[in-house]
Structure formats: structure tokens, C-alpha cells
Image (cartoon, rainbow, N blue to C red):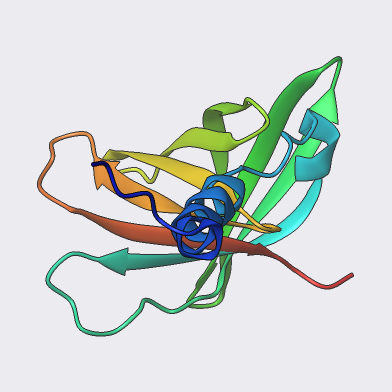
Length: 138
């Protein structure tokens, strides 16, 4: 004779499964105009215990449907400005390259809430690490 679980016991197993399915849903994709503005970029180099200066600013614009931008890095006696190379945003992933005069650096980050998290790597692969980006207050 086959024994059936009471309905309340079966429901206990189904509730966590349905909650987990709902929790895995991603936020809707954003449009490229979401990227326009100033962003605080925080790189963390692999094998380093502490974060970098945290003073890198990305200034992003949108012209004719194309994303463009500049990385602004504080330097002794002023600042350095490096144009972004081929920045793209597909609604969830922001990718860009920047030539710092020594190497081509490439970053790729996924949208998490209203911020971004991902990684960066140098063209030669000799340096890389984590990367996060948050919108700067206006």
C-alpha cells in the first residue's frame, strides 16, 4: 500500500522551491542612457589586500546612440584623462577598454542593482583584479 504525504508536509517542500525560483529573477535590462553621467570606479588588483585609490572617475556620454567616455585619474599636479576605447552597454553588462600609456586595460562589469561589479585585466594578462562602479552623486 502506497503512503501519501499529508498536504501540509508537501506544501513545506514546495514553498522553498517556488521562493527560490522567484529570487533568481534578474532585474529588467537598462537602456544606454542609464549610463550617462559620472561614475566612481574602484579597481582592486589581484593579490592585493587593499583597494586602490578609489579616485578614478568615469564620465560617460551618449551621442547618436553610441556610448563614449573618459577616465579621469588624479595625478601629481593635476589629473590624467584617458579616453575609453569601445565602451558598450547591453542593458546588463558594461564593457570598456582604456589605454593608460603603458598597457591596454579591459574591464567588464555586470549590473547589480544600481551599481556594477566585475573584473579588469591588462592586455598582457600580467595584471588584473576585481572592479566595482557606483554612480557619483550630482
